[in-house]
Length: 498
Image (cartoon, rainbow, N blue to C red; front, side):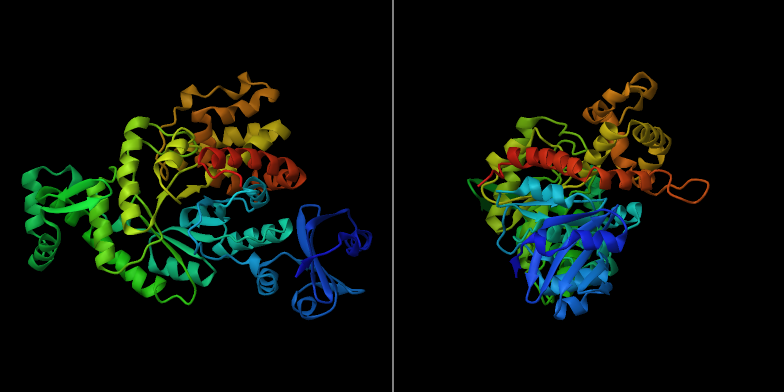
């Protein structure tokens, strides 16, 4: 495989065939033996074009004529692309590079992410979606990987990317994600975690603990009760009260984690990054609880790539960290020491726009770590709308207000709608400033599914089609916005240019 002279792709002939102007993505032009392939766009639709002959020409499905085949950028052709250009298929982060989850809810952001990543050693998870996000956007995990793979081909990005089945809770979803090409599973065991335990007084705690099977209690007490563990420069004691809390809170989750690992991760024919998420809880993860979990994972021979505790403070969607930075730094240092001791990396969830803690992460965590972002890419698309189509932005903003109560059922935010400036008070040239206001950001962040999927009286999409048409017309501007915004994340995280 080699990059090829773009003049070998006759765009005039393609325009004659398609009847409209064509944009050729020159970084995609690639020679495969007797065949040259490339990515083009006509209006809002992208295609693979193949010129010449040979196996890849024959296997790509499309409309052939005069040694040129125009092929839809669909799932079947993506699999052909993966076969002949392995760098377009997702892989695991086996070298444990610093990594960033880049949840692209629109399937349009990866080219901008690639621009931001230039010159860094970051391993990107271009394909990263939770079941909730898939439901809200009406996409499948195949769609998510398709979009990432085609963007990688389009931009000539050859250094590897991952696909994260994010916050999966059910075995059937894990199995499906792996079958569709996930190279990372983020296991959300929150349904097996008993959040009520942490609030029990001593008497109630003891009562609940005595109800546990005697063999379970005896096993954990023998292993950990009043034991001292040296982690870095600290000695941590698992006292009886805390051990009772942890056993009651996490023992079912640990059984679930072990079952998933043994049935889906360890038996996989390819490397899989396995992340444990314990951040979807009502209270922060005490470092003693993290130690208990880490000890149990080791005892059960469950090898994890990353673990996401719930840190102190607020990690709300789309806005900066809320909390005491000094306390966060001290808490982070304890969690980082535990992760380092047991040989896995820390993962920070809801990492979008947490600019105030990024330097603390870079300074405190010695080595590699993982940060998940998602909705911030959507918000940059909304910024683009505010800059380029004020009328569409106003309709999106007004609809978000109507749908906010519905969206809030799915997200923890403290948005104050009464502090958002009324639309009629803001001039078109100032609409972009809504994206600088925390309350407006959260309003627009959590309502994305309704803005994308809600329909009009005729059954068509109320706003979604106009948004995607704008993204196609303003492709370069969207990439520039993302490169700047994600670039700020990378810089403050210490994922600096090489």
